[in-house]
Length: 396
Image 1 (tube, rainbow, N blue to C red):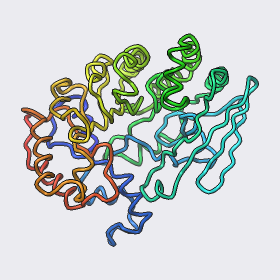
Image 2 (image 1 turned 180 degrees about the vertical axis):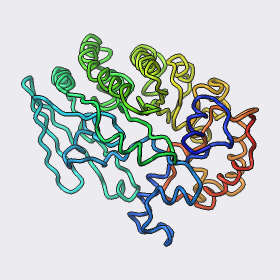
Image 3 (image 1 turned 120 degrees about the vertical axis):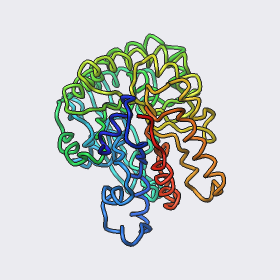
Image 4 (image 1 turned 60 degrees about the horizontal axis):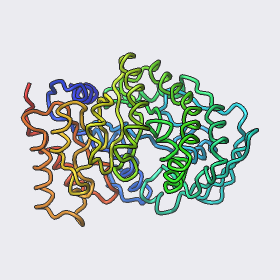
């Protein structure tokens, strides 16, 4: 089987010829290339070349958020919008005017509309660049008062979603080395988008309590954009679509998830399934109390599962709740490949624990470093994981 075939089979809970090992290496690569600390033989090599040498699949789930065609497109991260090659659609504004002022790693962005103006700020620090981070920090969120919700609603109604974009070229480039996961949206519903991208966390919860009708009305006006994005992904050649990321029992507790995230995520999953797509959502974080909700939404893949000891749930807890569906991509703690965090014995114990957690067979699991391989990861440990997984004979 090719890496692509093996990943798809795992997501579908079908037999595989060997246990999939597809570590996320993009931040590790960018950080070490920036620092000049890649092994000398790899110093001028693209990441895909290194992945082939290591014998691992290409992890093409989370995009390079700086991979834009026009420099100012980076600034739309302030609204939770991106313009990356993983998207099977293009975004543009009809009436909204965007102005970007950049000083070093600081972006000050203004969105002017007929109903008002929003100001935001993004930061890309030297440390973030050293660590390979491409998703900028939003230090000033767009919504600062209840009056700004009207402007947000206008901006999202003003967005034009045009199917196409650079996705087909990206998919062809990845080929059989992995699965080119189509990127739908960073949030799994309009309300999740408000919480995750647009409103300071504390203000969001105050507003949800004090002005629930305002949140509901804004989300309803944003929904057209979300549906258009899902439809564009459904029309694409993508085999797997990613919708939503970064859940946590503190910020997306089960009652909030059930009321404000699950309905749209369920609709989107059904729409994409009808088009023959598999659906992933990025589940890094504390997922206690959320696992049954993921199952109920019908997703096919829980990406970036990060188990104990970095979070409270073990990989065995996930497998007990999920079985082989939804599939798991992740399972190995990022701290375990840091020699400064885990001793050799602790690393060995952790790896054996996550291997044992798969159960009697290895359907529905793609092992990876969750959330991502850190810049200072031990290459010897990465190689050892691959060698250890290669010893396993999956049940046919």
